[in-house]
Structures are given as structure tokens and as C-alpha cells.
Length: 244
Image (cartoon, rainbow, N blue to C red):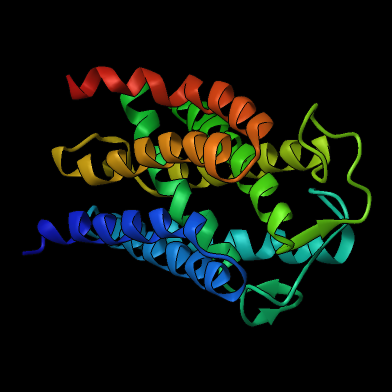
């Protein structure tokens, strides 16, 4: 039963995400929150099973909230931006689900990197790039929905208005710090691939493939589909050899 739980959670998450483009307004915002909560429970429960739950929560949830609070207050490192009230209650201007989103995707990014290299520095770099590249899907989608906005959204990537390039650099910078913390305080067990990681790797692959499809076909965001498809694909596509 315990081994089936991650797959069950992943299945529910997939169904919620499939429903997302079929809704709008409050229903869509509710599905956004539900997706993040499900993803958080999936990643944290798996990390806990691995003995790394506390490290993940401290680095990604705690660190994610801290950097977002600093960002809202000062504009560093993502640029000056504001959250709307559509994503639930806030603390220090940050919706409480936002640090959960950092955690949800930080864990699969880390486990994926373990399969791509055995070098510690390489694992940190690949995991950070993977997490930051995911934002090439996330921010354009959330800005289009009005969940947050930048006061100065330029310069932006070609075809992706509303999100300054500096935001992605801020994501990469914090992602590196986050992965350094996981590698430093998680011990050797966090750097050892395990067969039980399969549901989280499936989550990583699903997130990539579904994001490309949704942006290109359902959400009217073809440029972010292309940017995210290419740059996140660098750290996702090589994983396919492990599923042959």
C-alpha cells in the first residue's frame, strides 16, 4: 500500500492537470492550488521515505518562502512583482502555496539529475537548470492567468511578454543555492538513485511533456512551449534512456 501511494497521488495530479485547460476563473485557480498541494504531498512523502524529508522542507519550502518574501519586498532576485489574491491566503505578501510549488518541483529535478551524472557538482548544476527551466512554463502561464504581475516586465524573451529575463536568472540563482543545500545536508543517501524513485521521475517527465502540449495547444502560449521545450528538454530528454 505504501509503495502504491506515490503512483496514486501522481494519477490524481495528472487528472487535475488535464482538467485545468477545460475550466476558467475560480475553478481554474482552484485546480492550480490543488495541483500544487498534490505535488507537494507527493514529493515530500517520497523524500520522507528516502530519509530526506526534513532537508527538502527546510531548503525548498522554508527557503522558497524566504526568497519569495524578499522578492516581494525588495524586487531581488526576481524583479518587482505582486501576487493577486486568486491563489489563497498570503503571508508577507506571498501566497502560501508558492513555497509548496518550489518544493514540489525541486525534488524531481534533484532525483532526475542523479541519473544524468555521478559528479556532485554536475548533479547540483543539472538539478538547478532543470528547476529554473521549468519556470519558462510556469511564469508565462501564471502571468497570463493574472495570478501575479511584474511592474517592469522588460526585457522579456521573444514571444513571452510579461515576464522579465531577470526573473529566470533569479530562479537559476536560487535553484543553485537550493540544490547546494540538498547536497550538503542530505548526506550520501540523498545522492543515491533508488528503484523507488520511479514515480517522481515519471512526475518530472509528465510535467515536461504536458507543459509543452498545454502551452502549444490549449493555452495559446506557443513561444513559452518552445522556450521551455528546448531548455528544460536538455535535462529531461536524456532521462528517457532509463525507461527503455
